[in-house]
Amino acid sequence: MADYDLAIVGGGINGCGIARDAAGRGLTVLLVEQGDLGGATSSASTKLIHGGLRYLEHYDFSLVRKSLAEREKLLGLAPHLVRPMRFILPHVTGQRPVWMLRAGFWLYDHIGGRTVLPATRVLDLADDPAGVPLKPGFHTGFEYSDCVADDSRLVIANAIGAREKGAKIRPRTRLVAARREGEYWQLVLQGGGQREIVKARALVNAAGPWVARVNETILRLPARTKIRLAKGSHIVVPRVHAHERAYLLQGDDGRLVFAIPYQDRYTLIGTTDTNFTGDPGQVSASADEILYLCRVAGGYFRAPVEPSKLVWSFSGVRPLVDDGATDAEDLTRDYTIEVGGRYGEPPLISVLGGKLTTYRRLAEAVLAKLKHKLIMQKPWTGGEPLPGGDLGPEGVEGLIAEITARHSYLASAHVHRLAFSYGSRAWRIVAETKRIEDLGPTIVGNLHRAEFDYLRKEEWARTPDDVLWRRTKLGLAASAAEIAALEATFRSGPPEQAAAE
Image 1 (spheres, helix red, strand yellow):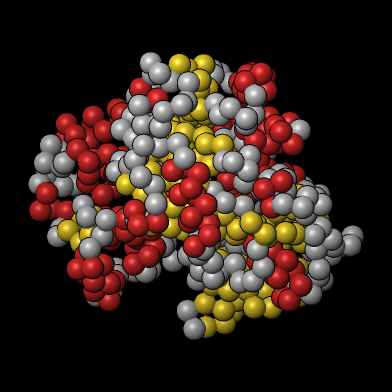
Image 2 (tube, one colour):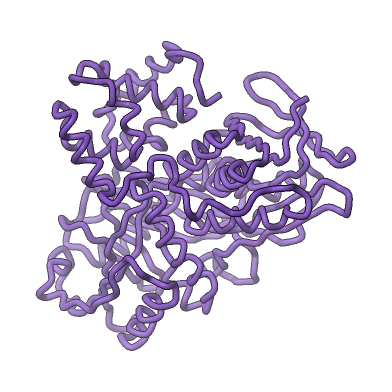
């Protein structure tokens, strides 16, 4: 029977972040995830690393402050996955007044200790290129800084980092039973058609929208803090503007919707916020949500934004701490950490709420709750880049230039995708190649067999969706023939025993 210091249930951003931090402190760690890593909420975000401008309206200054501080931190730790972007909020008569926006942006610029990103400025939309894609009638805009991120790959980077520090990462493995026995948790796992029993000195429930279900039905220990599930949906349409800035749009109901340049050719629009009941694993954008997002964006842009233009839509369910707010959009996005267990019993840590931006701080807070139980080294993740993020002062652009110089046969779009997906680990795919044929046949888009093999061996990819929608976003433009070729490649079996097992 395997014996671990820490077992983690849930392979989203919080679970993988905790696993990496804990393994780097010298703990023996096991993480189990019932599906794919980042396969639920963590791959269905608005792809932002941000302070949460609208949280200022709810006076949630503490959350905004720590989120902004993490924004700057992650920009340095994962420059290939987190990149700065300027956002434009067009002022709308009858919505938030100019004086309120000025005050809010001043606070947003100063509350989080901003050192890298440029400050807010006021735009004349009649003269600035940002006004060109907009319908007539918009005169004043506010341009501010935040960051966009590849949420799915941020999860994978943390999982890789955890594995490289010694953690066991087990996707497609379900916790089916658990009980306390003396100073250990005894856990029954189901994966690959087999059951096994392991022991752990502490257990973390980071199951996201399933956190209450795990506590109540598997652990038989109801959480003390009530959780509300909130559904957020997004749509992807052909690019509605040519420049590389994003927009923050105010709906008629006062809610805020982002329109963000996405994967070069598209615009990502979202999110909605609605209360949700049901199975978090069975969720999709409703017709009403799609119409709502089209209506908000269509009120601003000259380019048509309508359901017939949709390229993709996706939805996720967020587990939010129920602070009594009536509407889902008013619930706090901050996290709560519950500690269960009497003296002498193995502790249970339940992670409730949270957001993509603050996952690293959350992981540190979880481990701080376990200091009395487990002997561990000091916090470290704030100073060591995520896998692929060790790019030096030249950053991603320097990596792109170096790959291009050494492998001139690669198309520019291919180099950019490899660099922004894998960072320095892109060399593991292309380093030994001297011509395009060395990468093997193309399977989907510009993904060749060599990259496919890497994803299977190093990144736990086991299904076409793992590749098309989480490790890459090549599903956006994949043809039926390419998807069939990818399915056939999976059926052909792994090139060798996967290193990620």
